[in-house]
Length: 230
Image 1 (cartoon, one colour):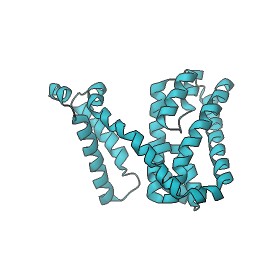
Image 2 (spheres, rainbow, N blue to C red):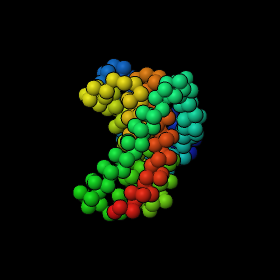
Image 3 (tube, helix red, strand yellow):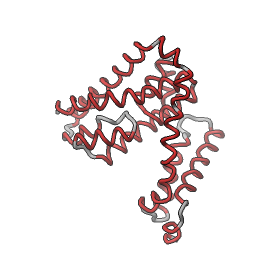
């Protein structure tokens, strides 16, 4: 059976999309925040690979083609931003202040928790890019001498949590302004959170997609500074 998985060209794509479809089906039936299609797809795929003894390399050889869609999907995020360009112009200062504040808060909180838990410098710098998009986060972790694999895991987990809880957190804290929602989600949970922001509204999605890019750039600069503090 393992030989079949190794020689099958698209089995990774199939099981990934299949389990995501299962997640979408369960979401429509259960209608609960924790029943998240992305989370379900990840959990079920991991269980499937473990059950059949399939190593990650074998799975990735056939599933990697899905990642080719990331570039056009990311570019498509510019569409809602273009449609909301006038909104951005009217609130430019507030948006930039919100993104900058978010990056600083992220850096400070990582520093504080790293000192509290006695993390090594390598572990500390690994966590600094946890809230930005994966390609930039990998570059930051490598440049600062962190653990790339852990950095990727922390980024993915941040995105999943944002996708699941973003709307609930906004409701709990009474955040009603669409621009504020979008900026908060984009800065804290990058592309995965932006998917939820787009579901919440076009303004939220536009501001979230903008925040991904600007927060990523600011994090590159801020992480270099904060890396020297531990």
